[in-house]
Length: 334
Image (cartoon, rainbow, N blue to C red):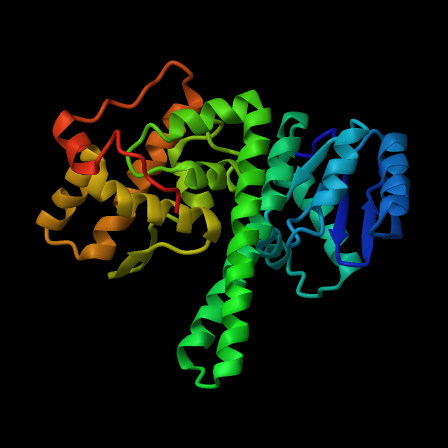
């Protein structure tokens, strides 16, 4: 059923914005524009959205869209995210195999109108800014990892020295951006409260909590099954006739999944609930990976419950687990 909301489809690239404004009535022509991906282009897009009272709909584009989102929020223009994979699948369902920036903008508009999209609330603006910082942190970590791998095979002393200096410099930058992320969380009371409550779970540290807030803003707003699909933790079935293949996880948000994996690995050691659940799965005969994934889903479900219910508190850890984990000792943040 066609909605009454007008969705302006915007395909964001590094240098430009391809804009598609659908006709408000049958018989009218759609409007297409090519705008610059800068403040000048943002202003033109804002004016277009105001004229037709529309929601600006975009795909995540590796960070090129974040400045546009912040600008639209500043001027009270509704913005929505469209999942890139689902948009492409929607195009295939239409029989539309052509692809260019103009076609993609129109496709995003139709997808939003027929399937629906997630509106980015004004309260999420700090989340968008936090995501910018966490993305930059991940870029620094990836660069450091590449240099560390290079260092293991490099035999030239001069090059090894230069690589070592670069790794030290990256370590300082990573620490600096982590401090910046925590400072931003401290300024937002809602984020501060969630991070404080998330870290009450054994295995979940400040950086894991920040990553979840930045990369999974839907937490606390949707059910567990939806979150599992968003993070790529839902086992997808594959069956045809009498043949049935092994269910596997796929897709989803890699950065969230990585953060949950590390938290779960730590939680198996220091969290009695996760540890017992993991051991139960292993006792059933499941190998490590088949046991760790459902444990990650259990952790995500617990985090979702905390975000959804302000009065919910995780069960305190037994004293035996606290002594084993060294609770009370000053531990350095990794």
